[in-house]
Image (cartoon, helix red, strand yellow):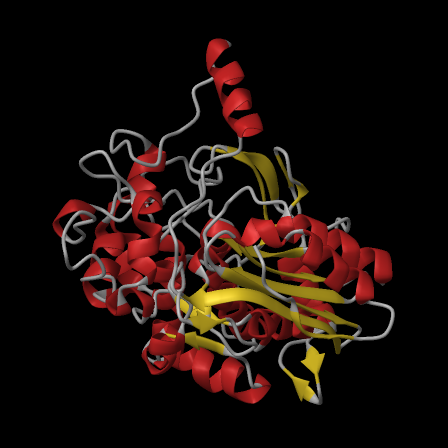
Amino acid sequence: MSTPVMGEVAAHYAAVRETFEGHLDELGAGGAAFCAYVRGEKVVDLYAGRAAPARSWRQETPSMLFSAAKGIAGLCALVLYDRGELELDAAVARYWPEFAAAGKAGITVRQVLTNSAGLPAIPDYEDLFDLSGPDLGENFAAHEEIHRRMALSEIQYPVGSPAYHVLTFGYLVGALVRRITGRDLATFFEEQVRGPLGLELWFGPAARDVFDRAAQLHPLMPVPRELTELIESLERRGVILPSSSDPESICGRAFLAQRGIGVFDVLDRLGADPQFVSAGVGSGDALGTARGIARMYAVLSQGGELDGVRLVTPRSIDAFAKVRFRDPDPVLGRPAAWTIGFEGNTQLPLLGNIYGPSEAAFGKDGAGGQKGFADPDRRVAVGFVRSHLADFSPLTVRLVEALYRCV
């Protein structure tokens, strides 16, 4: 792809720019941005490619975060925990009495935040969401109805065993935030996190304000040949990976599978639907820049304070950052390292560690290659967004490797 890499790097970080320049072919038809903080200072802020056919990518170009938006929900829970308003080992029903229905009285806040509450799917989702229809994003903002269904839901998977809560994570956290604070998740984030820190992250109704200048998404790039061969090899040995488009599987139900497709099959359409983008769920529906993501995690890499703004304490960060599960996840179809509210560092086929070399790193990545993480040990924070979606592109891996060589 013939496009220059724009932006700035601090002294001694030129290798990151060189790495970006060497992997421009990974951008496909779109663009991308990479930002990093080290010891509380922004040291890399780079971007390249096109936000739309007639529009170059800029530093302030917002892009769809998909599940990297779960970091927003996790951070809001962390703030409430730090203030003593949310107890991890309290029953969810303590804050949300209706949730105790159908045998769920013993499910804890900790289990919700570690994807082990046994509720990976929205009950009877087929009558709420039509992934094939013209109003794809309709009803994602139906919080009260979805909270009602989650409260009445039976347990879907063994409680205490992790099963990625693809969409329900944000709805469950949002229900807790509303019942504790009286505010919805988007309002709480705006007032307590985004505003004080000056983050380029737009969540809930705020996303509509920047929707028209957001990057245009392109469908997922093909899976690399090496991964296809690995999957075929596993299948020959009788290992069947979960399908996100099979409504009979827990994986498919978590991804709203219906009529042979699931959320993964319509990512680019979802990201182009303002109803979905502004729904304020906290599972996959925010817009942000790379530097917005990096700045959010810079706070967590710095013990909870950045540029004179104290958000949370180091003790609370430590509680949330520790990996609680490191097991194969039946929804993701791969091992996952769940912390409280975030995902810990783990390895992916072909790509290696998702958050660099540090075992202490934690954050959340998103479909199509979006990424954000904090490394409290090395005091590093990273944000990355891209518009031509690619789950197995080596671009971010190489950028993070180059960054750590410079630290």
